[in-house]
Image (tube, rainbow, N blue to C red; front, side, top):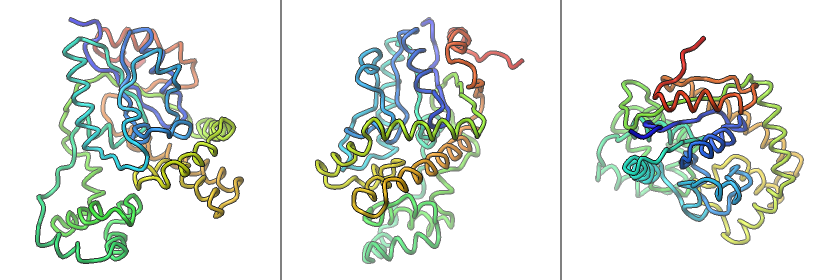
Length: 311
């Protein structure tokens, strides 16, 4: 039997240090890293997505980053397909695999299954297709505000599907996608999470935003617009990019854009933790302790296939 006979999952909110912890664990276990991040799939979106640097990628094999250009959309279904293939391959070769990233819906879909929803209704779709996109989006805003906030007005296919699901089931697609009853376990894994108190995490988020700006994030966004014209609706959901685009296009001062990024990132962290706390069997670690202090604990538990007992 391989020394690490389960996948290892490292979770935590944005700016929690989970990527650093996962990278060090991968170095010490000769593991590969699976990115579970809906924005790191986009090429050339590096600083704002906290993508592993070329140096870090050279140290440990990374998977499911830099898959598509940022003017293309990328779906959770495509992610699950690619992740499934990678998991099966690494298991067949007894290669240790560590999954980490910041997209809870990707975790839920990979480990518990995608929402399938009702089958297509051709007549209903034809009726909806006859409407202009702004009317479709307005209708969706009335019946499913969370989905409307997530789906761009120009994304006709997703607008129609969301309205179709609501019409056929009487429930918003957003509620189906966050359904947590009777989860189906698709892949077995050992889960660890980094836990911060809110005030400390907020300070880390503010500091990281400042360092990202100093590292050239604004120039990165300017280059994306010059090269690709505009981001796809899904890529444009990446926290911070819309605010910097608004600044470059004269709608926000840089000071206001940075402040809005900090606020949006703090809100993202709260949403992430709301999701992450729902996953069962996560062994939460006090993130205020040095990451090095957790390495031996995690590696020992990983070899034994079970999380340590709570004190």
